[in-house]
Length: 129
Image (tube, rainbow, N blue to C red):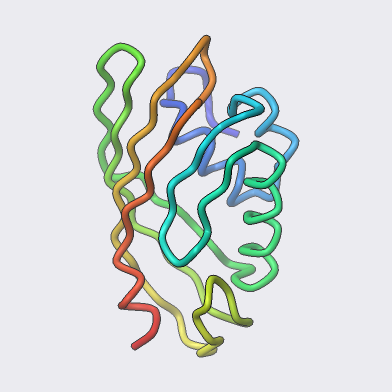
């Protein structure tokens, strides 16, 4: 995991990429709402862990490279480049066996130091190609 000077978004995505889903307990509010494309929205930290387990199973080399982060009080926004190889179906997208690169924007609201709501806006069409 990255150091304390990084944003909540960076720490959340890095923990997910590393498969460190137990770190979600300190990063995500138990009742976090994550608005995500491809039917992957969740309404609890446990449900979000399940999505990441499925994602890592389908895309073992999944990586989120945070390009920029804006922080304003309890609001964070990040521009992210997501890469990986679709080894199995995930989020309604069939396995292609090919690497992909996808742009993503992530916006989060924080409450008492944990993510309480998040929006993931991603160009999932590039994976289907």
